[in-house]
Image: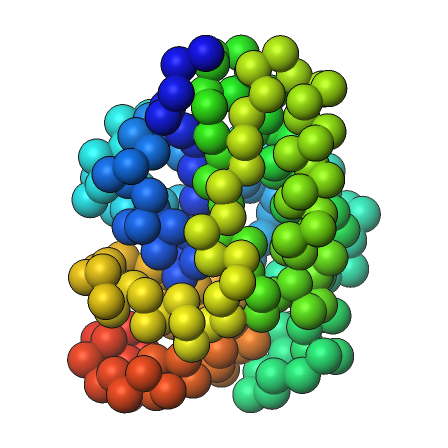
Length: 223
Ligand SMILES: [Zn+2]
């Protein structure tokens, strides 16, 4: 097996951008996968992912269509339902859950890995989102790695550089490692600029504030 040829799951948001920043030197990321599951922010995610690929010299970027997924979820990320604005709570997190999303994405990435000898799959699963989303948890990733020992020939390893981090930690390591945070698009909405009010924007803003950042807060959120 060829080592250090990796796939990254790229939504273009804070977590996947920081993963690219932390892993691009060591893990030779050759393929980025962005998923189209009918989310409101799709076009912004694709644009941000393209910028991140360019910045980190990731040559191959594919957008994978999963257009049936929006039909089986009530998540406000994809449906006509309005996004919860101005609040961060367990309830607001629940309203943006998409069933087994990371489970699906990682299995699809494992198929790519198996077809072309990729040794690692990088994903921005983290402690903060694991509280509400079970497919972000460390135990899930460990079980999935065990499953890939049986479901693939190449046996790719899922790498989770952020698994022990919450959003404050993620912004802190981004700043420490000079990750250009302005490349991220982390908003759930479909507007051109970050809305500053959705679940994802609020968590990002709070993490910037907790790290005493004013530069990126102004640049990304115009405040
Ligand atoms: Zn937003």
